[in-house]
Length: 301
Image 1 (cartoon, rainbow, N blue to C red):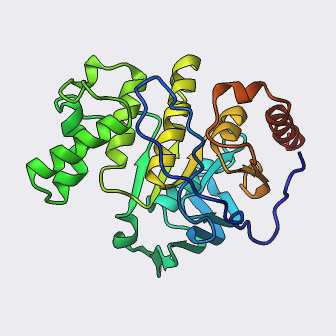
Image 2: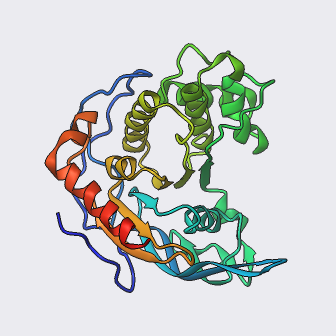
């Protein structure tokens, strides 16, 4: 499998035939349908152009990101990988509106996300965020945690509970709606966090190592579940991970960042058919993709 190295702008792949979304799978099962991702990858979900980020610290300036150019197609799943400290999380925080770029532009659906150094809250209101910790309120039930973004937007109780219950079913938490976070496993808490991020039907879902603290078996199940959720929702996903195998399994493209300052080293298309089962990791094509990315990563040492 050849690697597609970065050019001036990393553009989305050409459009592919679309299939209808699958019916929701159970909490630990994969429905096995031949479902491709929804959405139109020719339409731009996110565009980053010339983005730099420099932090000012007591010890001087830290140049975290340099000249980042990237386009993510609407409905596309893009994974970001690289060494610790290469700027993956910084880039995700710039995309999410939590950090302003020092230079460059960020657009969502052709709309500028930052104007004169100020964020456009209307743009970022369409984004969902999932971090490594689920950060659920312990005194809320699952359904109330999932419904919280809707409550903050003034949605009525009956409507937000119905939406939250629907999302619990989507992420495989049917029957646990009235449980409290302390009564759930780590994987189930992350499912609730993903459901909460989807509550307002975001156009973009940004995920910062959401499964990093889970054991290997739970992480595999969550990767299958996330693949299913992506197929059903059609949301654009940018996913940060330290695991090259996880990045390849989930993504349409894998973006490799160099050590600080983070630059795009390469953009690798992942042409493995969807849906992907865990057995795909044993194939020669999957192995070639992982080895190729790991070799590039080693060359940065």
